[in-house]
Length: 569
Image 1 (tube, rainbow, N blue to C red):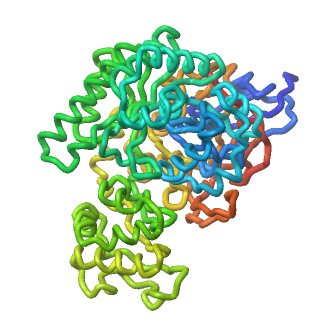
Image 2 (cartoon, helix red, strand yellow):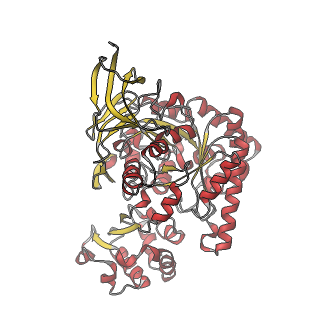
Image 3 (cartoon, rainbow, N blue to C red):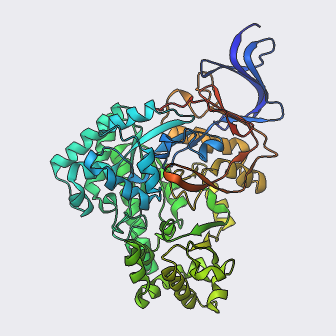
């Protein structure tokens, strides 16, 4: 044999992303695609990658990110691109930057600064804003150098604001028939230009992901009729997916019966959208209870509904809390979100109120305020508390007294105090083992590009392999790589076999050492535009990551190759 390839991956243990049994073979890559799988003894290549003793699998597909701004200054969409991810989906939860009139750009950035906690200074410095329409936004992404592939959803918040105007969209007004028709036209135009689907968050008046001014997002108050108009659009096209996060948060503080009824209404609506559109729905259940059983029953009835939940929550998460920079980490508590929006003086006044403190205390007691650790402040007022837990500062473990002390320190320090807090510490292994038992559950929800100062879940692929598979043994590597690549590619209907190791498929491939695969310690990185920082970590054990047949990562480090594309369905 004398065939010539760009790369030959030699003697790797191959997981094809389709749940077939692993097998040893070589892979020949030519012009960015997989052109041969088998034994390539005697064949030539520009470079041979010795994968003996390594696992070879499709690049991971991250269906839920918010790299809508970061992609313009970080071609790797890190941390995702540092952890085996070769394709990211942006425009999730209904949030994004297009379509957007020039006069609305500042407002759009302010929104993202709270709802997804992207630093405002970074967006102002890093976004090129060379678009107005959605096709122009896609064109801007195409022109941007990328080291990962990017798939683009049409988010409904900017769409509703574009069509209805900010005031009417935010007021929950039912769009007119003419407005619904304009929305449908814009979705069609966007998908003709390369978008892969639509997205929306719908949490109601008591939404836990709120606008910068503390009000619900436009889609939080969306009517069923609007989503059905979008569903009709996708049905007529017979293409596109729907990323839908729907749960009425109004009854969250009510009794169990009301919460169950709210969940049931949401699920019935999702079923109606599935029937109306005929398209796959990526659904983030508001509450776990019964969610897996429900999604399985939907599939038994032929409804294409796929659940996705955070992979990262299998481990305890700690984060830095600062009311100026990271207050939104507790926005899932309504009283907290209302108390921490506004100017510094307005927030200080609200936090001085005994009633506000009482409501915050009632909501935050599960996050163990007594254990919060004082780190530092930009003012010297409370420097003597450095390294102390809030219970020791207040002299009591009582939650109410700890919250009083927390608020007093925040006010005296002009809200500049940093605290080390348990963001999520109730990992229930039995629950996660149960969830992984649903063979169509999709790991992820990295939220990459969002919440950058306190949450970094772009490592979800690495974490999934080292915990769910290697540590606990809940599923096989064959199944894991199907869920990380083949299944999300199927849900999004990605073209040309992307997400699998198959002849003719794009050569998006990870080659890693399963035994040593790990995650580096989290770092504070000052690498965002506008002199802003974020937290991030790296994957350890990735010998090579190929994107469209080019080496993007080698020995856990970027090569700087910009081989990413805008991928379509």
